[in-house]
Length: 301
Image (cartoon, rainbow, N blue to C red; front, top):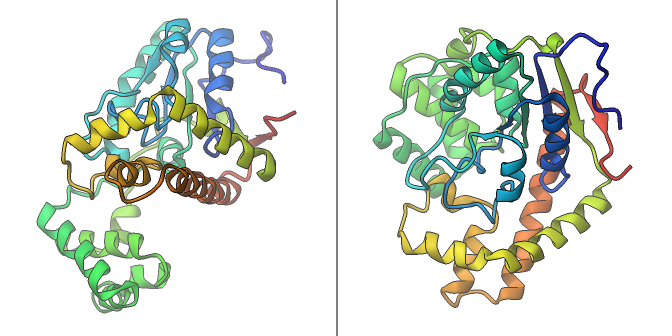
């Protein structure tokens, strides 16, 4: 695959998206060495300090080859957000612009790329009491009940969402109760994009599903060999709130269940590989629908 042409106009950034285990980090490293820029994380789980192995963060050897930014800098006790990611990305982009470098932004969190190129609505922080209330309502009353509540207080967002998507329904309810304004209003007042899409090289890795399933299974075996169980054990010892993102990372719940004697290692292995495969399908759907104009590359070729 062609990495760069010295005669073409310098791109402002290279963006590499793709499903889990598709080889994004390796490709980003190749681009970074060619362009001389840093690799910048755009994965909402790889920001967590506690999850080097289970999120397949770049190895120390890879980090020594080129600068890596926004990896493993957040403690598991904190909940991270796309707004915070953008704030932390701003000085990295500014420095790259001043020095003439080309940052390589890589990850599997589609929302990060969308916010990068299209802006983000500046919704105020949701109080924990409100967040906990609506999450509890969704768990106890079910998706249909919280959707009905949304239809009563915010019919605009109810029309945009489906009852089968309780996570986004709960988000809309949280925003409405906190601000008194529909999430639709906040989304209409998005912040400006950080990068101009036309000045970026935009790549989506689009592997064959069978190939990817094998990669996911093989990678998890490598994670186990690299200390995934020890990483899960250390995380469990912190007794964190199960609702925190770090506690819901793929592989964490089944491995903790195994460590507590509630699940065999084979059961944890099967559940993790299955969860990863389903997650990859959701990522592929997002990229296909939202990034239809991006360059698509089969990493197996």
